[in-house]
Amino acid sequence: LRSPYRKMLVATIDELLQKEKGAHEEMIKKLLSKPFKMPVPGYSSCGSRPLGLRHSTIRCALFDPYAEGALVLFTPPEISAHDALKIDASKKQVV
Image (tube, rainbow, N blue to C red):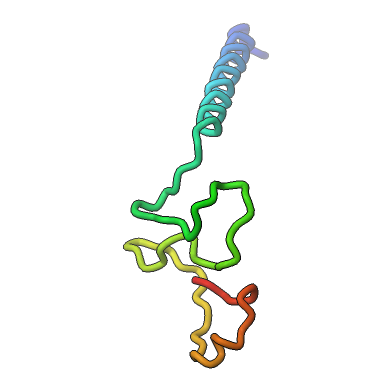
């Protein structure tokens, strides 16, 4: 046997979920409408071009791997000065 109040609870929960979904969508729209900012304090990019345009040909790190609390997942192997001169700039691995 079902309680007559069960349908009322389901309807209330559905309304609540719709309100929460709408609030979530509004929050996402608000976040995406803001201009992009660098999350690292004191960061200066390697070029003066804005996002969306072609990047410079110089490869550089997009974050400071030596900052406190930085998570470094990959460190390129050390190369000698002679090998650094011979390697192609487009194939150079950066931190």
